[in-house]
Length: 186
Image (tube, rainbow, N blue to C red; front, side, top):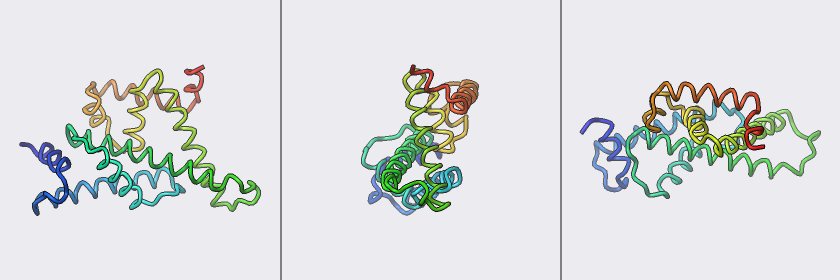
């Protein structure tokens, strides 16, 4: 059994059934999830979720599904999807919470937060449009942006050539940057 298979086996076990060495690997997985969450903090600075909360919420979401993962890359791909859902959900809640406040009463921080929330919700809406016509493009963006995965890791998860992921990444960036996704659904 190689290291990746060992990690996958441990991820699929219940935490209570781990020996000391396996617990160490479990802690490594937790640290990796924290790294992914910190990536989100860097990309979306004013998000209403802190790193620890994002990791714990994602972990709970992953454990609720009670599914087995094919490999390490598959686990972290699913984790990146969970983090995306959490960030979108928290952004929607935050926006609803301050929706009744007149814009002129916003502090500079609140204005910045609202801009980032609007941006995040717009990206999510555009990804929804993309998924109707090109679901893999959405997955590539989510795995790369929200999961911090490399093109090689994404190619492994999606079982395609890395050059395909390179092309998909370029396509989705252009679509999102130009707002063409909305035209795709019209």
